[in-house]
Length: 129
Image (cartoon, rainbow, N blue to C red):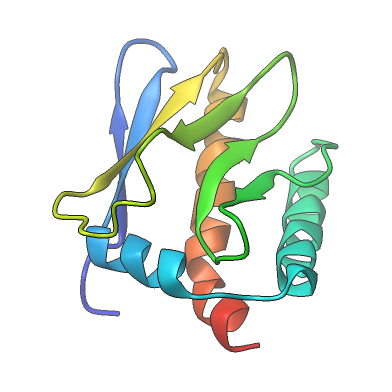
């Protein structure tokens, strides 16, 4: 891949956001997959979380039956990274913004970024499995 697909933007303390490339987002929204692939991606994420000392099932929240992850959730009283874009508007012209919620430690921040990276890393496999 020859373009930057995602980029974190750090704010005050552990607050952060992620800018996602709009072309990648549109590609993920348009890619329809059976729920079994979404389940397998969540299993992969669960394995990654265990390596990081976390235990939370199904951290990826997919938009309908697409490859697009609208929320990365790790529990802990509502720690997540999510977008609030109107996904129905597929004329995406700007990067998609994801914003963190209740991130209180560098570990939480790292885990969410690792989940985001895992999704992007395996996106082609998710689409073409």
